[in-house]
Image 1 (cartoon, rainbow, N blue to C red):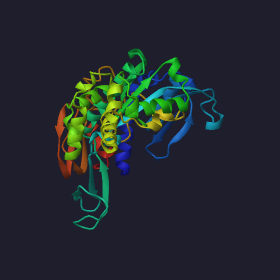
Image 2 (image 1 turned 135 degrees about the horizontal axis):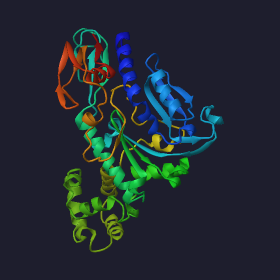
Image 3 (image 1 turned 90 degrees about the vertical axis):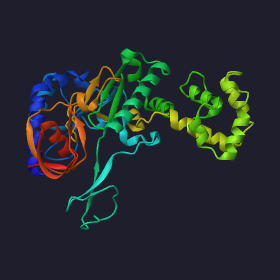
Image 4 (image 1 turned 60 degrees about the vertical axis):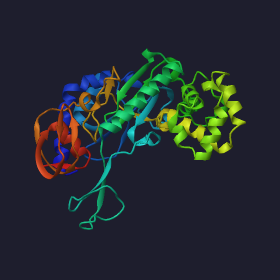
Length: 389
């Protein structure tokens, strides 16, 4: 990012925090027990071990420092400003992170393209010099509607599991758009705050179906409906994954199970295991895991000292705001998380795919100077495909 772009982005972020500093401060509970951290436009190094006594101190810091990214700890500490071994951990919010970059098992390929830094040539594959001029190819990670929609649906599934299987109430669950490529889900309760790292690992494993074993299936779990469909020969995608001879064996073995209703589900599975080869059993087990796991980032949930982006703060690589969500089904991140102004800014764009941001469509642009709203200019500069003219 060129100096002119950094200066402009800092000015736009400063204007945002000047008008919204109190809102950001009000979003954080127990400010005086939190560690804070930030990146600045002047340097990329993460500054940690910051602490504030109250909302006014925090708000003043935002306007004075103008962070590129602003974070606070999931944990509550007695001495948040001290080094980690001296902080004296008290508790931590239970937080889940769903990011489009991690949704490998959902058949989602992240939107990535490669841009030559010399001639601007666009390539779908990296690892080699530019085919036109031999220059260096820069990887650009884009944010598209499809990735965000898959991440949103995964978040809906996570919230359902937290409520229906793990017993958390609707009032204890808060959902946020991260400002980037995914969503954050917080569970706020006195019980969840006291969970140890080991207990958080157990919750993470349950949600991700780590170590899942078909033999111990429970009809109360989300996997039960999927298995019943498989046993009832209603899951065509599973049958498509079997070899022809395996399909014949499987269909013969499941005949008479009546979708698992003629006996309880676990008994049906135990019967089936004696009828089919281990390779088919293993395929079914892997299929259920792939379809029913929720791909949360395990480190975010289990690390009780981790920093998380602060609600209503701006994302340093998109200019979008980390937004609390009231209605996840209706939420549109590319509209609802736009927080910067419509003021026109001239930028030189190396390449940008067509994008919908706010309530408008833009692009595609390729090696051209255009005037665009500030929120799009920041987005393209943050993704590394443009600079301020």
